Image 1 (cartoon, rainbow, N blue to C red):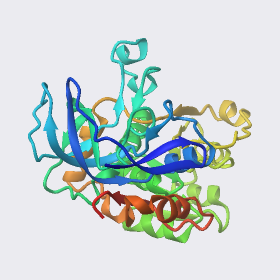
Image 2: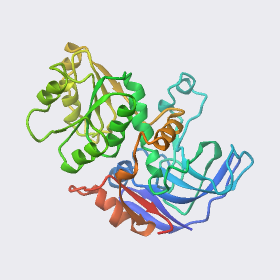
Image 3: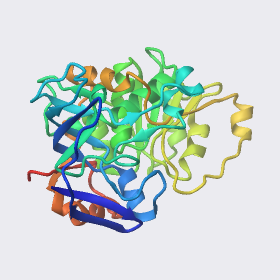
Image 4: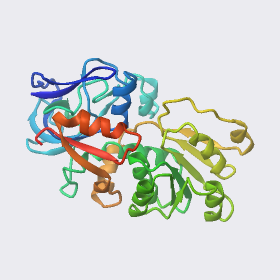
Length: 342
């Protein structure tokens, strides 16, 4: 079968590899769609950073159809449409036992440590394959994987209904974070410089959009919040300047949630944190149960995924039409889906 195999920085090859065989507790899926994430691009250009095993098949946002089940079906049947719950934790370390599975030091992730979805068939633990409701379409379902990142940030923030929340950076994760906070009952303001991102935020239900390239964003957010500032500011862009912006724009005694992954080290005046008595929270990946909760939110129409699918390509076009396009300075896409059958 065909697979896109990572061998190192700037070295990804479309290869013929043996079809994987299931082990104890696993199931095999025929991959229907895998979406390309910014993390894949970072690994291609600068890695391996998060990748823990080389060579490995890339792709961590994966959906498929069950074609084979091992000795522990976990309620699955042949033909089930599933999304891959792609984070495996040990369940026995201090952090897993204390409920912080997202910080498990023994974590394994599809496409980063174990073979992922940019191939025709994939095996994965059956208890980490979640059946898709009929209301979730195949050509949007891979975006169920980044959505738990947004939900995890919401849960970490301690948001309450009626709180004001500014989301900095309306890429895919930012757009999902916006929707997750709306589902939690917050008033959400989207901040970005790209017109396409601000337009997307409007379509997805932002209460206000703020063009960071026009005027003083802090003043605008203060106007929207009766001169106080947002209760919560969530940084999802990973730009070097935006954590400082978040500290400046949030209200006194407010909360800043850092979700973005930073390719360069931001310089921060921590006096802003001290003098304003800010709560600063890091949020990475997702916790146990977040994926299943997101599936329900999407099935109920509270989070929309289809708007964020910008293109669909075949496995043999991943580098030129996927990675190179997403890495361009003039990036004009949110998520690109890859189908082995295309």
